Length: 216
Image (cartoon, rainbow, N blue to C red; front, side, top):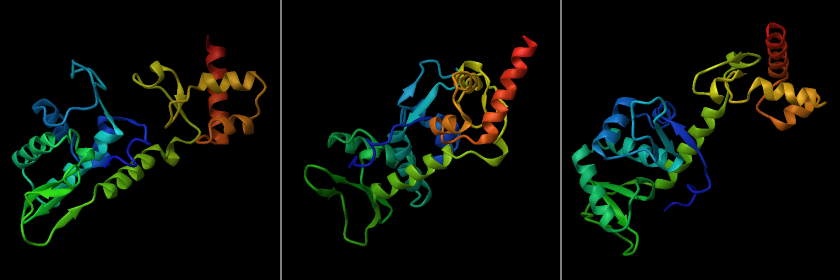
């Protein structure tokens, strides 16, 4: 069931996962506190900034849960019971689940038996996990796209690149661009190394580094 998941490597913040899955941060935190869905990479102290970091598999599982909640109106208690039943069959993560909804009841494919446990007579409303995977992949890619407002600008944030100045919308330090430039790299060559950047980004980074040097 995990085909297409293992090939994607991503560490996603709480804000990013909220956008991808359409679950609120409050919902994500509530599920974390309840132990229903704990982030793959989480600090013991959840009060620390960026203490909840999710994997791509987490995002796939959470998007599946979001659809079960929003489309089929499945209550949390039923989802918790379903999770317990799936675990008995060796399914420990929602990203590995293939789920159906029959007359309002969630059911899942038992991998070893190749049967849908608890299925009743009636039309099956299928939630194919592969569709969720592709949807989440697309949303992760969208997160990587920079808005036009960030082009040719620099910024600094406490939790990005150890508070270093970076090119807006990226984690690329302006100092890195300066070092490439000092090493004799042309703008075109720098852009080959960092294809998400633009000529305006290079100009802005070098100008900023020059200003820092003058003010030092």
